[in-house]
Length: 494
Image (cartoon, rainbow, N blue to C red; front, top):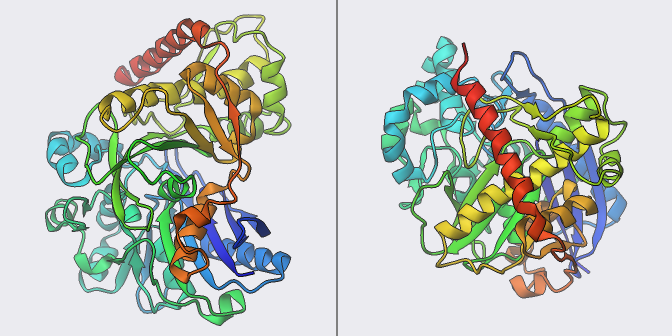
C-alpha cells in the first residue's frame, strides 16, 4: 500500500501525518512551537523553529509508520510573514504571525483604499494580512529596504519558507490559496498585482512563483527527512481543510476550530461580491485547481481556552472545559468576547480587546470555560448566517456544517453549535482534515488516488442534530450585546 506524507505547519505546532491509500493514518508526529509576545499586540515566531519543528514532526511520523511515502503535501498557517536571505536561507528577524496587530494604525490610514483593494484581492484592510507586515518590516529596518530592492531577500508565507528550506533553495514557490491571503495578489487575474506591490512598496523579486495547488513544487533534499520526496501538493490551512472535507462544489462549507475558527463556503467558479464583513478567497476544486470561496475569519477560538489554562490558571487542561460546561444548566448571563487579537469577521475591529460581561458574585471558573466555548458557537452563527444570505445562490439553508480541527473533538461544543445554528453538524472521524487535505492534493498528483472520490472513500462522520434551537435566539442576542460592549470600548480609547 502506498503512503503520502502530509505536513501541517500551524500556529501552535507542527503536525505530520503519514496517510495510507485506504485513508488510514499510519504515522503521526507533532512538535509544539514557541509563541512570542514582545509587545502588546505583537505576535512572533522563530522562523528557524517553524522549519525545525516541521522536520522533526515529519521524521517522527515516518518512523512510526515504518513506510516510505511517495509524495509530500504541505499546508500551513496563512498570512504569517517570513523574510530570509536569498543567498544563505537565513531568516531576517522573527516571523510576524497572522495574529499580530502592529500595523493597525497603518490599516486605518488605508481605509479610503478599501474598495480598490477589495476589488483586487477580495479582502478587507486589516493587520491580519501579509502586505502591511512586509511594508512595516521594510519601512522600520532601513538596511532591509536596500537589500530588498537589490534582490538579496525573499519574502513569503510559511509554505514558501518551508519549501525553500526543504529543497535547499531550489524552489521558491507558493500556491494561489496562500497568495490570495497576502493582499498583494489579484484573485481575478491569478497573478501578483503590480498596483498593490506599488501601494505597499514591495519589490516583485521578493515574492515567490505561484504554482497550482496540486502539482510539482520540487523535491526535498535527503538530508532533511532522510529521503528525497516530491512535493506535490500545497495549500493554506483553511483551504486544505475545505479540500480534506470534500467541499469541492459550490454551496459546500466547513468550519475549522483551532487557534482561531475559519468558516469557508465554496462558491465554485463564481466570485462572490465583497461585503457583509466577509472575505473572498481562492480555494481548490476537486482536482486542486483554483476556485472561489467566501471566508469568515474568527481570530480567537481554541486560543481562548489556552489563555484560560496558561495565563489565568482557570483550567488544568483544555479538555477540562467540556466537563465544566456540562456542569452548568446555562451561562447565567456570562459572555466572553475573546478579542485577544482584535475582532475579525464580521466586525473587523483591530482595536477591540477581550471582554467578559455578566459576572456576579456567583460566577465561577465553570462560567468562564463555558463562555469561552459558547463564544466559538455564537461567532460561527454570526458569520454562518451572513454567508448563506450573501451567497444564497450557492448555499442551501438546511445543508449541514462540516467541522474539523482540534477543538471539534469537544462533543458538548459540537452539540451546542448544532443547536445555535439549527442545522446538523458533521464531524469526521479524523479531525485533522487540514493535513488530510494536503495529503489529498499531493496523493492525487502522485497517483495514490485515482481521483477525489477515491480519496474520500474511507471518510466516516458523526452527526450532531439540533435539539434545542428554539431557545437559542435569546442567548445569541446576549452575545451580540456583549460584542457591542467590546466595540464600544474600542471606539472610545480615551
